[in-house]
Length: 146
Image 1 (cartoon, helix red, strand yellow):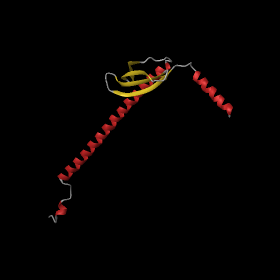
Image 2 (cartoon, helix red, strand yellow):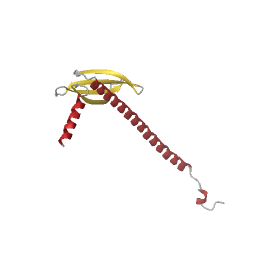
Image 3 (cartoon, one colour):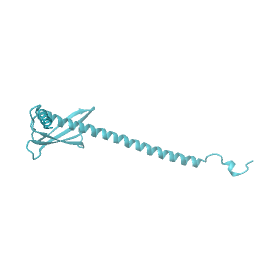
Image 4 (cartoon, one colour):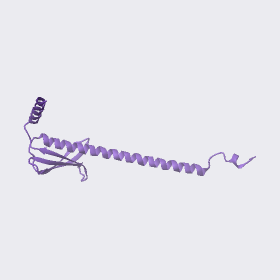
């Protein structure tokens, strides 16, 4: 014999369970979307980092050639981190004698979307080791004055 209504309602109703499942489902969907965004952001950051390294390497190669660069634009491809990358190096004058601006734009091969552009400067090549001797000479002269 049922004494009152509260003894009869000891469990959850179907509607309460359905509402709880809907809230849990929406929460899990939001967490999955957030994780997906973080993965995409990590992938984009990795591509920007690789593109920056490729551009900096190209500028270093031009500097190490120890030649006066010609005002021009060149392109090429390189395999880096198991992926093909395309680069475009544009050398222009700066208005300062024997100082050139180098702008290297990097993209994934076959794509027109530039991922990263790095700018550097190249001066007139000097005698190898000359800058070190000048620095040493200036350091020694400064030490003698003290």
